Length: 214
Image (cartoon, rainbow, N blue to C red; front, side):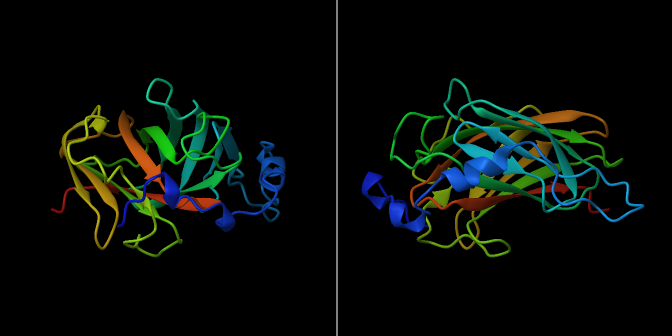
């Protein structure tokens, strides 16, 4: 995908009042489930200049913290109950300012840490992340969203459970962790940098735990 410098930011892709989205950040449940349903309601968690939601189902966010800098990354703690892909919804909640102060502005640089509890009952032998600007649509060349594609030798990609990683930028924007394992009821940590040089209010992070093929 094309990587833009600071001039690549486009504030015209945003609503005029970020207050709309901020008002939605009260940690309140979404509309009530039908009578007799026992599923825990999804919640929206605010951290830094963003919100994080498990509204698309299949997993549960248990906490969110940090501002998004290298020293104080955005830390999202999750529980996955199956070995199937799930999607984290990420929304901008603060004004856009290229390279502005993290936490006060959505500045296009998001140092992330994802802490994932494997509650699927199966060991995971790989774990893949995929960025999508439009839900269910592969990230394209010019959307400006990537796992720090500009950096050819990243030193900020790390996992507590996997020794190696691969990045793919076309036709998908994917980061695959491999050479390791996450046993049931164990937690793995994943660190990386997301860069978004043409920001939108909403984008998505698909998380795909992999089990042995045989």
